[in-house]
Image (tube, rainbow, N blue to C red; front, side, top):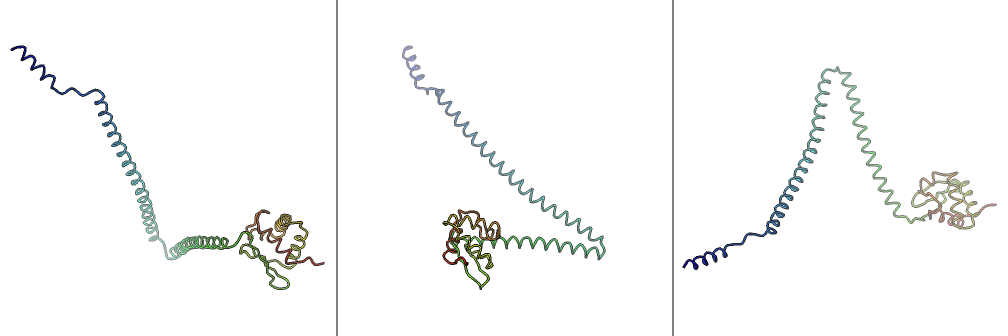
Length: 215
């Protein structure tokens, strides 16, 4: 009878759950550590965003407070001035305001002109060149939509040097040298910077096929 009871206790003891292995405990610990790390990162990100927001709003408030303070101080000073002084202050204020408005208008105008010039340049081929004669003494050379005035003596000089060139590259080199020496404004206006610009070769070709050297 004692042996049976002992065997029963033995089976009951065997039926109890086995303790978790050490590897399972380590896995649970890693998961918990990962959750804590994610929580810290999220908290840090929120804190950083809040600091950035506070700095931005603080800078805005500082500018507003500074303006209000200056306005208050100027108003207090105005109350102590006589009429001529007030008239002078108003005149100076008008100048400052007008200058600011002028500068803003000038910037907008320059931006608009730059935009128009960019569009106009895009409408012309790189070697777009034309020459038209206004009367017996004046000529216009147009390169990529930019028109530049030349007198008859200058056109004769250009014609002579172009006919003296052996070919297009030589002609472009001679033209560039002459323009740099005699009419740098033409290079500035047309944007020609070197002999590689196709407009110079086209100008050489246009001149030699249109004009002859007079004896």
